[in-house]
Structures are given as C-alpha cells and as structure tokens.
Length: 130
Image (cartoon, rainbow, N blue to C red):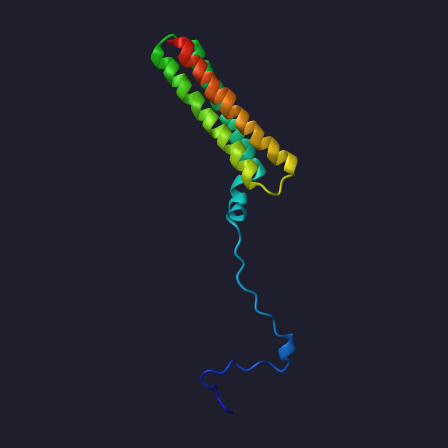
C-alpha cells in the first residue's frame, strides 16, 4: 500500500469511466427564486386585497362630510391602488411560467390601474375639490 501522496488526485474506483461527472453549482436567476413568492394563490389574494382596499377607501371618502374623513378614505384607496398595481406588475414580470398573453395582460392591467385610478382620479379630486 502506497498511501496518499501530496499533489496527486485521489484514486479512482475500479471503473473510472463510470464515475459521476463533475457538475458545477447551478446559479438560478432571481426570478426563479422569487417565483414561489408569487404563486397563483398569492396573486389572487393580492388582487382581492387591493380591490377591497379600493372599495373601502371609496366608501369612506363618499360617505364622510369632513375633510379629515375624506383624506382617510383617499389614503386607504391609494393603499389599494399600491397593492393592486404592485401585485399585477410584479406578477406579470416575474411569472415566466405563464403564457405570454397573460403576462402582458397583467402588465397592461397594472398600468391602467395606476394611470386611470391612481393618477387621474387623484388629479380630478384635487382639481375640483378645492
């Protein structure tokens, strides 16, 4: 028995050609690791939460007569717009396992919510309220 000598590779088994080949570690893109955070259930819950916040904020804003109450309603409504837009846009960008048309629909819907509900309604409220 010779033993192990410094600088030499370790002895192979009796059949060196059947040894498993070296596999370098797999580096997954960030979208792969974040995809689990945005499953179909999480997307549905996020969209539902955003819509409920929008609805509650609009109810508070519509049924209060004070400026403070209307400001609270607009705050809750803007949180709904934030949640809804974030879920739609991030879901459309990260979920590469969905069909291309579905991803585009998520991105376009998020943009429409942001522009129409988030920006123009706030512009209308500030312009005609004061």
